Length: 608
Image (cartoon, rainbow, N blue to C red; front, side):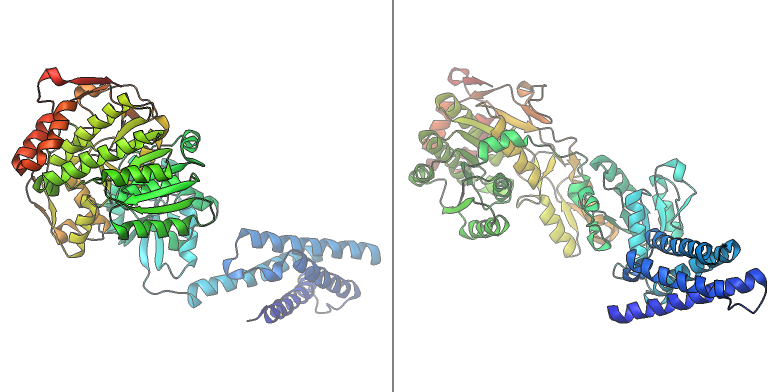
């Protein structure tokens, strides 16, 4: 129906209602069929003209009545009331009396029939025209404003195919009440029983301000059921009016870390990056590419994307150019091998970066156990080449990405990272460049993470393989890791090892169970198998050695180590002799050096 046709229909319907209402009111008030008197006809004409004028004024003919609510009812109230008032004034002026009972009954009839005609259309539309036979019965967790918004949208949105059935809320004052016709059953401890008793297929968590610990608690209750669990987007999406049923998203593993993300000191980071030249090594990797995304938000003058894999560098370059096309940052892709000392020196000399984020490294524990010489080349020699080139060319800050596996390392990868930290701290003592390292645990979604492996196994129908039932790890998200690296660069004074307060470690087997549940499967369907601890792995990881612990936070949720012992001569000997050693000898030397199993006479202590 076109707007003109729709307007004509509403004018015709309202005209019939207004004229019929006043004459019927005359019949009800006086009990006579002689309703066509001068005062009544005059009032009918005045009310009719006033009503149409006010309807245009209050945009009643432009309302989408399939979505009618209190706002539309108030507009009708204004139009009807003012038109009756105008009729009363006209009666007083022309007839010299006001027929109060006649106008009162007319007001009631107009409100009933004009308002009813609109809302009957909405009821007819919702009940019959848009009826969906097989809607998923949905439980809404959270009976606040967001929960009510969700319930309204689900009731009127066919594409969601979701039918709200009840609310769950921990506010005991709402228990046993009905909100929008839906009962508030009880607190989150009632989720499992409610799903079972009401035949719930979907659960929507509608509490945008929910913290991660509380979300984890709710999800663990939802995980006891077979219902699919989804969550609302962030609070700012609600405020800006972006919320719709299409925006419900599945709960992600990142939501269940149980730790709030680190807040950034935007001003200090801006001073380090805005308008300056920044170089990122390993820019095509999962951590390096996220560092590039985060850096780009601060409008550097140039961002040098350095990496060994041409395809990954091409992809991140194209992504950044598209995402930040309205900014003046110049993105410069550089294909280079960290092991090429001359090339590193040339790159640093050409672009003269102010800050270097060194994310390029071999990180896969089992692979480095099998190829320790490659770990030495990339993680040690590559880091040393990048650090020397940075120092020689006057880079202001050099931030190396390290790992919790560098603490009391049992693997080649962890040992090379620990020795790289030592070299960085030594370089800081000898250079005007500020050299720092950043340690964090496993990164969810990175290429070496267990998450992609678990997802592939679940897609294939299982089983999910976990090394050991007691294996625990610290976890963080890729964006959080990148932010920590940027914050470390802003806080750097030189020689520090920055560590994030990563909360409580997570059991890998619990992570596997959560992923299975989040995928919509049951543990019984997919299954979990324990494959045994792999070479170089520990059951638990540490972020700081006992002697490194500095209890005071340098920044909210960020710590630094106290001091570090550097075995410079032994590291140099290793770098000169490792090509002549077999894999076992390289591994032994790496672990001995990283775990301080050398003579005390060669120690060089750098205080942080």
